[in-house]
Amino acid sequence: MNGRDGLVRDRTALKNREKNLLLPLLKRQVKARLEQIARHINAIDIQAQALIAADLALARKREIIASIKGLGPITAAQLIATMPELGSLENKQAAALAGLAPITRQSGQWAGKAPIHAGRANVRRSLYMPTLVAARLNLDIKAKYFHLISIGKLAKVAITAVMRKLIVMANALLKANRLWKESMA
Image (cartoon, rainbow, N blue to C red; front, side, top):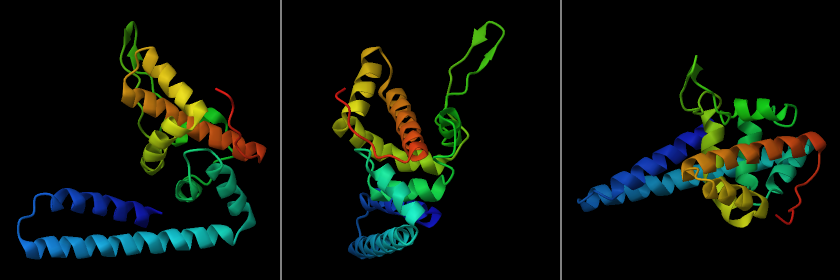
């Protein structure tokens, strides 16, 4: 899925560049390239879904991950490809591997912020937009997000915490081999 990630980054860069173009020729070239990128992303998605469907264990993983409201088959395929260990880890290990575990910085009495870093950036990137969707549609995630906001956390910090909750939830469900069920949060 690294090829897909690269294409998505290229698409974003081209869309940003397209806003400033004045020459019709350049606009046509960017439009043609965006269409080509869309076809390539679609081909990768189709191939990934076919490979997953051909393997019963991977198909079950996709089914479990996609059962979480806010995460769809594309995100499930991304997680399967970029974090195949998911489901065989402890929750803290899964969060750390995804780069969603805050790393405390302190020395003596001085305590700095606890930023997230390390881990797999592609996992974080693939979870960001689905997390925004989940924060709107998934009652469990929505409750967690608004609780964090209500106690004064910044939106980005709350989103990161919710991303961590999603990866931990996916790991736990895969470990238990069961589908997600919405609670009455």
